[in-house]
Length: 65
Image (cartoon, rainbow, N blue to C red; front, side, top):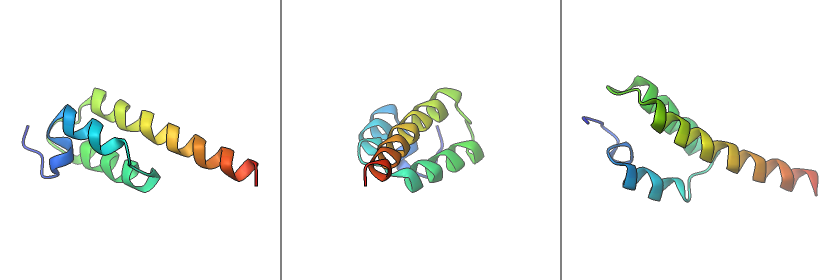
């Protein structure tokens, strides 16, 4: 697992990082993983899951303003 970004090197590191990741960070991580040596489907789906959560939270907040 030769990844330049340490966040994407291990599941533990990824999951810890995603706890506070915003939409922009999720997009950045998806692009990195897609360009990386693995292109792991499971990692992409995990990041996408977090992206959906933070997007939904933002949209709900905008609806209730």
